[in-house]
Image (cartoon, rainbow, N blue to C red; front, side, top):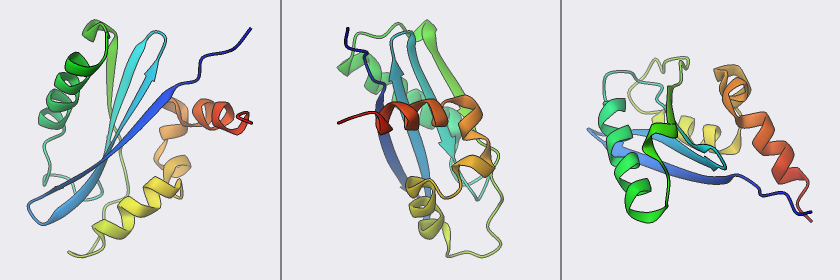
Length: 117
C-alpha cells in the first residue's frame, strides 16, 4: 500500500522592503498554513492567510474548515537588511527547529520526504 506524502508549497513574500516566508502543507485532513517573519509588523499574517486560502480554494478541493494557521514566533532581526538571508535560512531548515515549526508539522514532513526513493 502506497502512503500519500504531504505536499509542501513555500511562498516567499516581499513587500514594504521586507521578505518573509509562508508555508503551505497539504495533507489528507486539510492543510496547515504557517507564516514565518523575523520582523513583526511589516507583513500582516491574516492578509497572507486570506490569500493562501483563496489559492487553496481555486486550485485544490480542500475544505477550508480543515485549514489551520500558525504564526511562528521567530527571533527578530536587529537590522534592516538581513531578512532575505533569514528567509533563505528558513527555507534551508536552519531555523525550523528553533522556531518550533517541528512541533507543528516539520519533522513529520521531513521524515516523509526522507523516505522517498
